[in-house]
Amino acid sequence: MPLLEEGSVPRDCTRTVPVVIIGNGPSGICLSYLLSGYTPYLDPMAVHPNPILFRKLQEAKQLPITEQDLEFLCEGLEGRSGNPVAVLFDTLLHPNADLGFEFPSVLQWRMEKKRHIPHLVLGKATPGGAWHAMEGSMLTISLGIWMELPGVNYRDLTSGKRRSVSNDRATPDEISSYYKNYVKLMGLQKNFVDNTYVTSVQKLHRSHEKSLGNEKNTGLWEVRGYQQLQGDTHVPLSLFAENVVLATGASDSPARLGVEGEDLPYVFHSVRDLGVAVSCHGKLGSSSDPVLVVGAGLSAADAVLCALNHRVSVLHAFRKCADDLGLIFKQLPKTLYPEYHRVYHMMCSQVYSASPVANPIAPSPSLSPDYTSFPEHCVLSFQPDMHCVMRGSNGVLRVFKVSMVLVLIGTYPNLFFLKEQGQYLGLDPSRPIFCRQNPIDINPYTFECNTESGLFAMGPLVGDNFVRFLKGGALGIASCLRKRVNHAYLKRLVLQNNVLFSNII
Image (tube, rainbow, N blue to C red; front, top):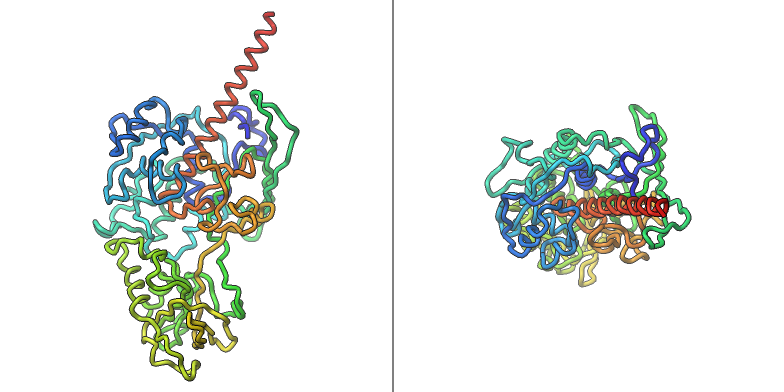
């Protein structure tokens, strides 16, 4: 989509903007930083440890990274993201990080107002997104420095909180505070509209227009919603945008088992609910029936740790084998993640006996007093009397009385405001958008949706769940939009020259 020049947006017209970003988490914040005129160049004093990439960077060192050929720079790079620009930006910000090194960034950031692209960032709360809602005492998977955004060192804002040389992970409280302060420090507040709920995003098609000899269908996006003020006051919101960026994350809607009784009041889908239960005096404790945790990811491990730390016994059921190579624990170094490896060790060593029980409802001697693992088990139902029915790989049914159930098997993004809830944007349009299994189908270098021009997606929606890599989406989108501004400028010059030439003739 063509972009309006900054000067072409009337001051008294707040309804039309070149870019609207939906989501004010780290994805939206990082993109706002790049669109605000902060521009990355190769630091003239830096040397990248990758000689091939360094040679490419030197060939165009006078140009900002956002105006170079990102596909060319990405060639040959490998990393832990499936999006090549994410790998590129990560290695520019944290060279050789996967090898355990902490080399400085090779980028130099310059504020260039001429590269500013007007935009608005719409978020449900204050800047930081879902980080404000996470359990505040747990540690992040990523190191604190990997959670930082360009221009502000994470440690500078969290001085005195570093835990150890080998373990520099952060709590969600620290991260959410960092993001909130980042927006203020970088002067981005004017771009953010907090406490805003988007209810509809629709494309308004216009007639075909020719752009430098190429026909393309152009149109504006209509973004509707409301802003919640103090109390219950809602102010309607209506905007028109040439480009819309989906940066909503993927933690809106928990994945469900779809079994009988999943809506019973003792079944929950968030670790936060367990935190509330153990903090309520007498509601959950060492004398309670076990808590059942369903799932084999990091959220499930967090729930196990939370329960054990409050002396609540745990039953842990998951569909995979305990030694399945796809388990996330296999990818985490023991020195950095000792608590998760503690859970994984219990998953492998404290396994429930595979032999049938005569009376499945009676307490079983096979249950450990603190934790029992149920690999290759699936939940069949939850009963009103707080009994759970599970089936093992051998077909044997087992029933256990529990005090609480945590179903933690992933989350889905809630894209209800889009046509077909955004499902048509996925790699497989017949299935809902799901970060790893069915992300939004994008151009890997611009992050523009392949099925909708002018619509972009980044972060977990395109498979980048870690802050370390979602920043690549900001680079790809900012680069694409900046090049379109330059293209529009050149087009205007061509038209002006044609008019001048015709007048002379």
